[in-house]
Structures are given as structure tokens and as C-alpha cells.
Length: 339
Image (cartoon, rainbow, N blue to C red; front, top):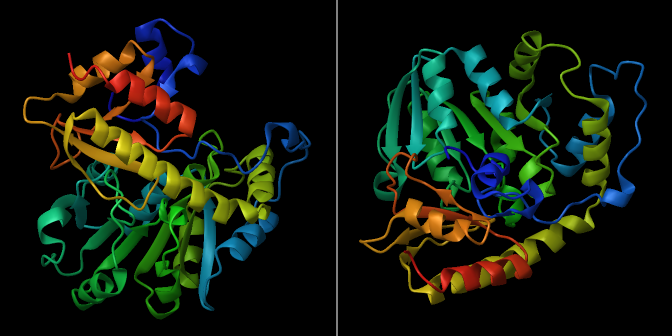
């Protein structure tokens, strides 16, 4: 599978219902900020306000930004990234690998020349002048958190336009680059909301950037790109401020439990340190991620084999942080090793 979370295809393969799959492949918070008993009721008409004022007010309260900066919402972070690159039309795009393959696909669809930097070995490498840099922090699929000030300075010296993806930053108490947006009109921030708020089916992401940049992005966007239900749900989720600290604490504890579970299995030579809601692990030299997935399939467990991440191999697998019961089931399934 080329993307985590395709429980429908996996369920067909193993002969079960989708809701019977234990999905460690998708890095989505197992907790939700809005209870199913309190799902918002929205009117089916009239059209929603195409400027999304209530949603933007809720986002601004949760993610404040400096004067001279504005926000635009999108139908998910992937749509936001595509919109930004379509507007920029960059000749050169720099991607820091390993990295989710969709960034490469979008850049190539737009005819960009893609340059890669191995952030594991040379994160400070020189980049082409006036290129467009895309950087994910914390990174995927390993969850490493980077101190951004030095990197931003290097990219600024090279005249780069920089898009920082902070879709997983909410899982740790770290500083956002939003504080620097007011002083750099070539810096943009993109964020997905589905990961932290545990709502993969609610497709909302946003971009923060200098006001003139957002104004130009909006000119290319269709009206009513978000549904009334999605907006009402996310406004309710954003209002649950207690959810933030609760999720960070739970994620840290469960991530430690998951790391110990993987270590105890004896299957992995390296478990990468992470500040996000997932762990990347490398199987022993004779291990194979597809074989491990085949073994775990008997327990209806889906994992993410990372062979299609640039710089990784089929020995690299990623596990999302789930609740204690799910981790216990994974521990039991891992005991037999790789067949």
C-alpha cells in the first residue's frame, strides 16, 4: 500500500469488515475532540458564507499569528500544498527526505525540478538559490523535531520561498514558525487538522502567510470548498482547549509504551526517536516489512511499510501511536516475529 489508512483495501484482502481492522498505518489521533454523541447538526441550506468567518475566527484563536499575516482554509493539507505550488509555479523545489511521496508527486505534476536533501545526514546542505523549500516539522515518517531558526536563516540567505508543514506539531509543546511570518513574506505555514483532532474524514487544512500572499492564493480558489458540516465540527473541536494538553500527555505515554513494545519484540535494530504520534522502526538485516505485514494481517493489524519513502527501504516500517488496548494487541501479534 502506498499510503497509510486504506483500511478498505486491507479489509478486502484479509476478509473482514473495515471496522475490524486495527490500523497502525494511519497517524491519526485515536481520541476525538468531539464526541460522537455531540456531533454538530447543520442546516442543509442555504450556502455557507464563502469567507468562512466563524471557522477562521476559531482557527485564529487556536493558532494566533502576527500583524500583516492572514489565513486561508483548504479542503485538507494536500489541497493547500497543491494550491501553493500551483500559485508559485517554482522551477526548483527542494524536498528534505525521507518524506511522504505525495510532495514529490505534486511537484512533478506541476513540472518542477525536484532536488532532495537527506536530512538524516546533511540537513544543513546548500540548496539552489531562489528555490522553493518544503520542510515537514516534526518530520514524517520518523517524527524528528527540528529547531527551525537556523534553517530559516540559511534558506533566507539563499532567497528561498519556504513552505513549512506543521501538521504534527500540535503533538508536542514546540514553537511554531508562525512567529516569523510577519517578517518574511517568502515564508508560508501549512497545517492539517485531521491528525491531531482525530478526524481523518473531516478535510480541513490551512495556510498562514503574509496578507498579500494569502490575497493572491484566494483569487485562485473556488467558493464553498468546505462543507457546513466540516466547518461546524472543526469549530466545536477547536473550542475543546482541554483536549490539547490531554492529547500531548496521552501521546507521550502511549508512544513510550509503543516504543517498549517494539523493542521487546526483538525484531528491530533501530527505533527512531519521535516527538510526533508515530514511530519509525528498522527491521533487522534479514527482515522485510512486507513479510511482517503479512504476519500481522492474520491479527487484522495494518502497518505502514515505508519502502516508497525516498531514502528508506522495505526494512523500515511505521507504527501510529494508538491506545493501550491496541498496543497490547500489537505486542501479542509481534511475539512470533517475522515468518
